[in-house]
Length: 353
Ligand code: NAD
Image (cartoon, rainbow, N blue to C red; front, side):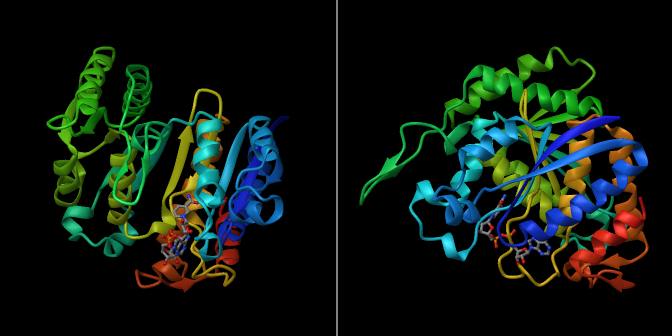
């Protein structure tokens, strides 16, 4: 029997609650599909600062590297907000992405028919939206040097190298091949030199994918198009900061942050996590929506473990629960027949596997 090692990083706030439910569903699906999962827990974020004095202990990096994949909840909270930069929980997350070389962040955003009303867009604009944002995650302005500040001046550097652009473009084109065959590359090439290199390089990579259509958009236009005509998008590829902003914008189209999964892929390692944060305002109340994390676990089965059938089973179980009006509190206004807590939602989805 195949046996996979999964590193669990529960993190802070609702992190432990939502990871527990994803594990429940993973156990159900592995039993049905005949493979075994070994789970090992590691610390990161505020809980790691409290326990070890750093947001990312070495043991976590080693444990992650020794695993087939990392399933991560969320980090952060009021308690750690005023720590110096090197101790902030978020620093742990940026560092693990860099350590594991997870340069490609994949964020699907699809509007479920059952939750059409939850979208802030008119139903005729939102219906059928199904896009994937591929965001470069380990380069760009969040990592560029020099950076710094004094009392009167702050500065950062947006830098991309050709190999960095090529590898993220490849991820986008490969993903488009498995979807509807279209890539929209987003940049600011009318103003930024770094974006001119981005545009030229993506255009070169496209020559190897004649079956995929490529278009380019400036980021300001892309931000408008995402809310006026989101159905035009299949795969959107962009750099770190533009992707950060556009992927959050895309996520609200779907109506609930609690439903959206993500994968951060590198050549050797991968991290799977919900797109939302640690939601300290609802932590410990058993009302968090575990679906984003459960769908992240499905992405993990698909991308890292090649257990496509098991991934489909999880996604189908989620869809069937939503179709039957099973909701958590965050989506209760939209067609709820039964509103469950976090734990019961996990149990419900696991029972539908
Ligand atoms: P957040 O995503 O944690 O919460 C935003 C709002 O959405 C809150 O009202 C929250 O209750 C709600 N929400 C989020 N996830 C939910 C879920 N699964 N079910 C139901 N409701 C949910 O963003 P925030 O409030 O800006 O940040 C809180 C903390 O999380 C901060 O410390 C921030 O730095 C951190 N954060 C961490 C990550 C991460 O770990 N990847 C990402 C974003 C923010």
